[in-house]
Image 1 (cartoon, rainbow, N blue to C red):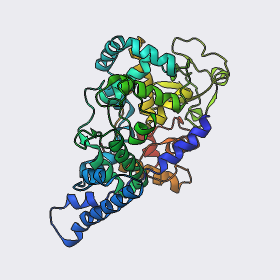
Image 2 (tube, rainbow, N blue to C red; image 1 turned 180 degrees about the vertical axis):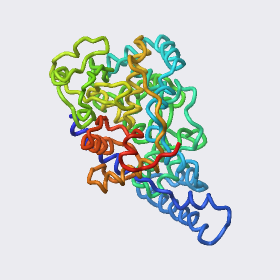
Image 3 (cartoon, one colour; image 1 turned 45 degrees about the vertical axis):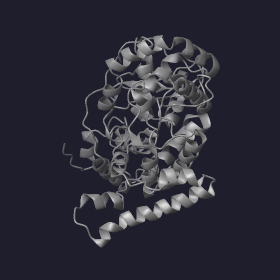
Length: 415
């Protein structure tokens, strides 16, 4: 399972190539010329094409006019797309901002408040209450901030941007169909810069396919109905393959001579194998010798915490394709359920910029180490390439791009 997931991770990571759109470049320069006006003309042409596609897919003219007649480009959306925290922030910074005391205490309060609903959802879908609270807390701070950007405007902007045009065009078409199905006014269709909506930030495709009526009013309202949102989240996770009775993973302790070249999503092994390699629970007890497969992750390098992750970790990553996010979900869920802090907290490390990581990827590529397509984003392929480079230099092969790796590659870092 983990090897198949690694292939999927590699594909998804390599397609997120860095691209500065013409529309973004035009906004950086105040001088108006005929060349700089071209992006706006191209955007209008794109919207016209999108209207035609919507019509061909059966969206009514009324919905097309209401949502696309006056839509404008949003440069902020492109800016957010180019600097997502999951791919540009250090693990310690990302983790500490999200698994914090406020979310833990609020999560416990909401867990008690919605206990009956959550236990019913666990019985029906197999997803434990504390995991649903964790997703809810990370996505919208338990519904206190669902996003204020126009879903349609964001999706049109991204559909007209070359980086992931095909994906966002499909999401836009589904958003228009959703607006028609649920009689949604464009003014109330507000959410994230990427088009995610409601308490649990569903993309239109997830909303259309997995959102369900949880309060029995014959409507599916992920913005205003907590039962709808939580029931839909449980249904979504169930369909993504959540395994009832199994955890997401666990923090583990490693021996001083542990071979970090065995870390990474592409190096899954049976628990018995990890145990023989000196991996243990943080209290020193054995992790067991069952036939369960797990991968070992060291998201902040060998000086930070280590985690064994199981099948449900991969399910979390199908919700949001980020190891940092999946670890945060797992750990926040555990804290809400009553567990303590990490045995080995994240070590503070500097944020690596897209440009710096791109330079690292390009240098590794020239040296013959496969990192996929250089894109300035830290994904499984880049981690694997770094591990192989570190191993060849007799360094600790943890796949972490610290200053020693950049120095060994002859790349000067400035912070």
